[in-house]
Length: 153
Image (cartoon, rainbow, N blue to C red; front, side, top):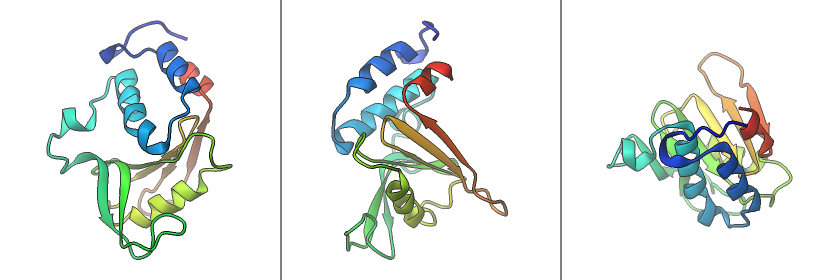
């Protein structure tokens, strides 16, 4: 594990220490977790890149044809993070679900309204799955489980 400090002062060791211990709700954790990932990887946060939210935003509102979450009946939903032409990202509460299938199902309902991003990413802080959605190709899933994945990246 490197001790080099990327932009923003977040190191792999700091990231692991902070998020391994976190027991926050999805709403309380998701944006801060994503901002910490941006700092760790030297990438801009949504507000740093796009202060209007037109291209890169937290809580991107979308119209859906059915309830987005299990048991929901609404016609609107929100992708936790969205970057036009790059990805849609949906978080779930850490360690609440056996799998991330519900988060993926929810994000799939948003896919068209999010302008068909090529990557759909789901995470519960301790696990992250990246699914490709490139036109004309089969979906591929890349799974990174546990904080050890950050240390080895």
